Amino acid sequence: MIIRQFQGRKLSMVVHFWILFKFIDFACASQGDRLPDFRRCVSICEEENCKNGDAAIALHLRLLFWTCQSNCDYTCQHIITDLRVSRDPPMLNPVVQYHGKWPFHRVCGIQEPFSVMFSLFNFLAHRDGLSKIYDHIPADYSLRNYYIMFSYFGLTSWLFSMIFHTRDFDITEKLDYFAAGASVLYGLYYTPIRVFRLDQKKPPIKQTLLRLWSILCVLLYVAHVTYLTFWRWDYTYNMAANVAVGVLQNILWSWFSVKRYRKLKKPWAAWPGLIVAWIVVAMSMELLDFPPIKGMVDAHSLWHLGTVGPTIWWYSFLVKDASEDMAGARLKA
Image 1 (cartoon, rainbow, N blue to C red):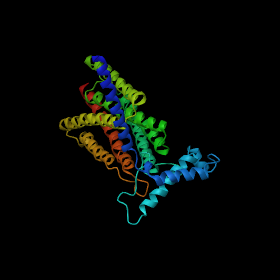
Image 2: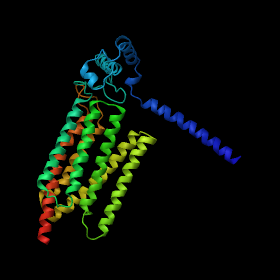
Image 3: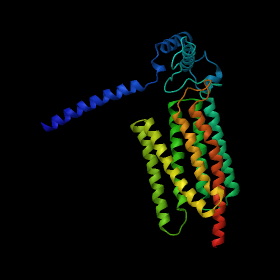
Image 4: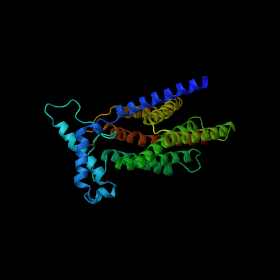
């Protein structure tokens, strides 16, 4: 009897939570998706233009996997947005989101051209940084391979960012998020290796700590991807996880920067702290979710633009730091 009562209460709680989550999902859906005028526009467009499949749309759009249906959706977003903006008397919030995104003006089929362009700038910044590592850090320097991997994680992350902002599909979104998560986590991974010199073979405890730290980071990433893939695609969790990892490495680098500057009294030793401050300011753009300016530039694209400078600066620090470290090692020898 006790078991049955527990099961009944448990079932009741599940039902109530299911209703609650359904209500929240509906309440959090994009306003534009629920506009009757938008739905009517899409329906009419598809009925009039999609009878022959995708033949009605331009070749360059089909090459980027636009379909007649998705093209109607895009067209109607801008028709309804233009009507709402031109309304007299004016509306309080005329520009609304559709499918969780602002209505961007595409360029040559690219959905978010400025996000793609600024992602490309970051990609090029990492590529230039990788060249600096190869050119200025000797192959026998123990941290060199960690810095090279940092570059490759960055290159991969921004490559998938360009792909995702070119065309937003389920697969491109997942690749973008997983690559970004890997890049952020790798940033945390190599930070204590440099700060606490876990790359050094003496004392032996450092190698043990390095192995344990490596295993932990791999397990954390596998758990992260598994949760998002097989349990729940949770935007809030993903953002919180990335922010937590980013904040932790920023704290470590800030502490290292202060400690290093006090020891060396050289301006470049303070660069990590200044770069962290820059990134925090740029990151604040993500909190300012405003409609895209001229239908092109939004807060997210500006966040991408804001990370280009710190990336270039960071590689300069890595080279300076490695040179100082090697010079100190030669003096001790």
